[in-house]
Image 1 (cartoon, rainbow, N blue to C red):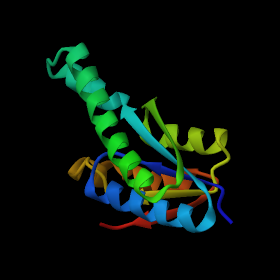
Image 2 (tube, rainbow, N blue to C red; image 1 turned 180 degrees about the vertical axis):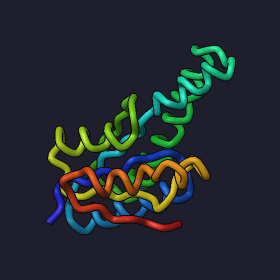
Image 3 (cartoon, helix red, strand yellow; image 1 turned 90 degrees about the horizontal axis):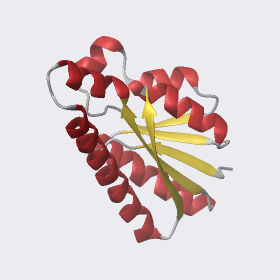
Length: 143
């Protein structure tokens, strides 16, 4: 039923639960899991406005992306499922929607909440925005 499963990763416990759920489904279905970390350009701009030096901010965000993707990769390799890993920059829900369309994703598996805390509740969470915008089924995983 599923051939390509997308898991947006951010390094949170909720994201790790989504990785585990997607890997389990991929193992049963013979699907490929796509791990995607989106570096939020809004975070880069906010940090720049607060006086942080842009190269330091970019380096930190890239390190966080690699760490989240490395964790997802370890979980996939432990089960032997096929996977791909990608990093994008931009607005997270928009980048996820574009990736879904470009890669003909059948299922998106996301954590119920990410690392953005109160800000996500005030502005609407990335998960909520993805559910409303992608043309694919979305499974919400809880830690």
